[in-house]
Amino acid sequence: MPAALAIRDLYKRYPTGVEALKNVSLEIPEGAFFGLLGPNGAGKSTLIHCTTGLARPSSGSIEVFGHDAVDHYQKARVGVGLAPQEINLDMFLTVEQVLDYHGGYFGMSRRDRAARIKELLEAFSLEEKRKDATRFLSGGMKRRLTLARALMHNPPLVILDEPTAGVDIELRLELWRYIERVNTEGTSIMLTTHYLEEAERMCDRIAFINHGEIVAEGTVPELTAHYGVATLEDAYLALVGREELARA
Amino acid sequence: MSPATIRMQSLVGREVARFMKIKRQTLGAPLLETFLYISVFGAALGSRIHTLHGYRYIVFVLPGLIMMAFATNAFTNNSSSILQQKFTHAIDDQLSSPASPLELLLGFSLGGFIRGLVVSLIAYVVAGLLVGEPVREPLVLIPSIVLVGMFFSQAGVLVGVRAQQFDDVALYQTFVIQPLIFLGGVFYSASLLPQPWGTLTRFDPIYYMIALVRYGFIGFHETSIAISFLALAVITFALFGFNLWVFTKGRYLRT
Image (cartoon, rainbow over all chains, first blue to last red; front, side, top):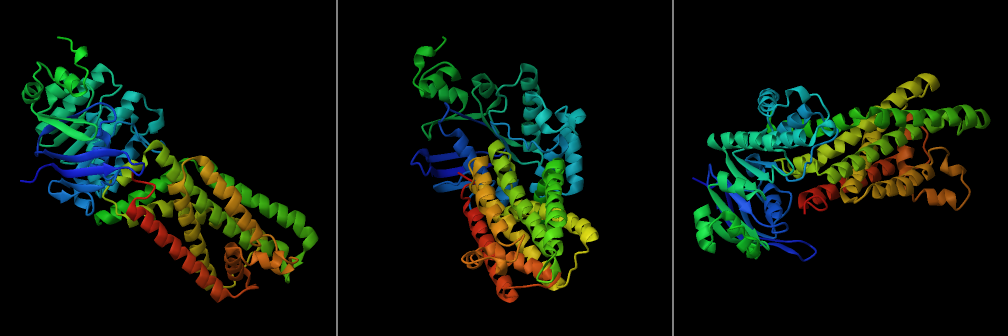
């Protein structure tokens, strides 16, 4: 069975000469809840952009459920849903239109789109806002809609780039409950977050990325053993060379 | 319906939804501008000039005004829409979809084309009722105005894709497109200009577009219609080909 995401020997060099990814190889099994952790500027977003077609890799390969995601990307793109770190909703559209056009871009029929929109608006408590323009939504509502949009075309792999940044506690718990449910139903998840307790609780496996390289990968016990520390937070601090901040 | 057709419908639908959402600005303002030109040049100047090459002055300038409305709206819509989406990163939704470079290019292009068509059609119908503008050569007019719309749609896409800030879009509009349209003979006949202006006008590509559209409407021409049409078709398809290369390579859009 092909992996949900298989990245091999990936390099990304920007025209400025910055090498954002260096020989990255990574495999996320189907159905996994996978965490990608690292400090700001480590290469997490670049990796996500290469996977979703927003950036072109310099070399290496990316496959989504066995489909090439770089050159012959159509099948691979249908398999991925992206909730980006930065809210990027179309300010000219209503909540319902955002979901409808997104479904259309992914080739969903009008009937399938209508049914899925109803389901997602209910799941994310957005029914009353369906006719509202996105620019008038609160920050929390925008975050919900961003996540709903990522799930709109029923992708078997969902990439969540810091989905709970700036979100209040109730909404965070609500979002996690829904994401856990989606994962239980078989959707593979790749998560980046700065909330280590979330990653520890949710993820089956975690990879640490720093300076564009995957420096460690495994379960939480494997990572703590690798760094010779007690908690994931301590392992992370060891990764970024700030052990003096350890709370134990 | 195939997924590709659904994608195209959605890409174009989004562009139309955008300009319909702000229709006072995207449809109302250009229509007002066109009617102001018609009023000023028809009523004020027309009462003094009377005829040009045997045509009533307003009948002579109206084809150029209709073409100008199509061209500027197609250009402005596409350049602004793409730049706005780049600013907010909303464009990532389309770029991360399975849409091919050709589908993306057509989707972004057709929004401006449709807006230009709507504005110029309304202008033609209303002005036609007021002025009685004829359509002498529809077989030249229709393909010519379609090519003009396509050319400026493609130009708008290219400028929007390359632009880093709104000033970049305004720069092309104010300092390139508008002067070339005005100097291309919208309001006068190039043959009446003193030298060297009469010759210089012939280096303005928009002169040939106006010539084609004017010939389609009133049957008047002062340059070869066949060569003008061929040249317009060549530069339009060349620009389309260049844009397709830009979208295929992901230049300016994907990092």
